[in-house]
Image (cartoon, rainbow, N blue to C red; front, side, top):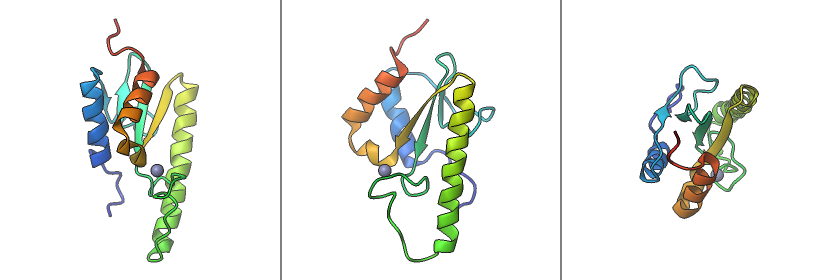
Length: 127
Ligand SMILES: [Zn+2]
């Protein structure tokens, strides 16, 4: 497992494909924004993080999984990720950004997540 944050993961590609199909245009990995959101809508001032349930400590079956091996490695790592995620959301919110987290497990229901993303983003076409 790489210590550097992975880009272009499978869940991320799934969300990008979905957004594209819904007619949204976006930018990726905004390096200038705290936490480097995966998908960024600058004019809307909205950003999406796509999080793997395990590594970001989601409160779901997958996120609560507790492998017995290598705990000294992954427990602190998940804790750091959670702290970093929370700090990024706080910082971005204070700058007027709206943030949506898409969890990997939510991608099992494409219909639902499509509806949530549309609610979050508003109309696909803005002037
Ligand atoms: Zn989850």
